[in-house]
Length: 113
Ligand SMILES: [Zn+2]
Image (cartoon, rainbow, N blue to C red; front, top):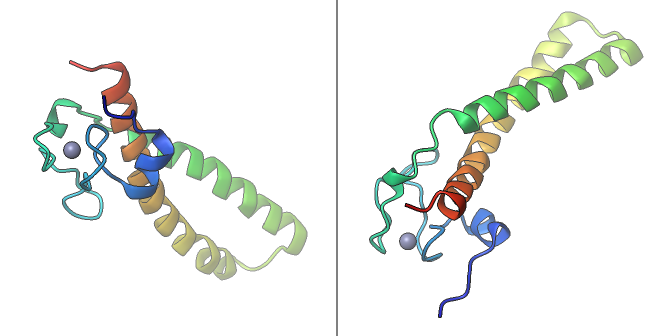
């Protein structure tokens, strides 16, 4: 009997939730249709969930920090632009990648067809 893979292990290696050996990504953000072990990843459609949660939580966080910076230092507008634009881009890409792994794992674990 094979050991069950934990979410942390899968997040760290961004690997298939079934075999744990191969990456689930075709490119940086695109999930493969089928894992090399034969497991069909396309059966576990995660839709727009990761994007929604990434945008939702990142916006709350960034606006919170932008307000703190504005209240404490009241810098001019271009400082906010330079500060927050790269942060939003980098964090949303990373967040979407890891949320995709989490959603696929949960879908595999609780909606196993
Ligand atoms: Zn696999």
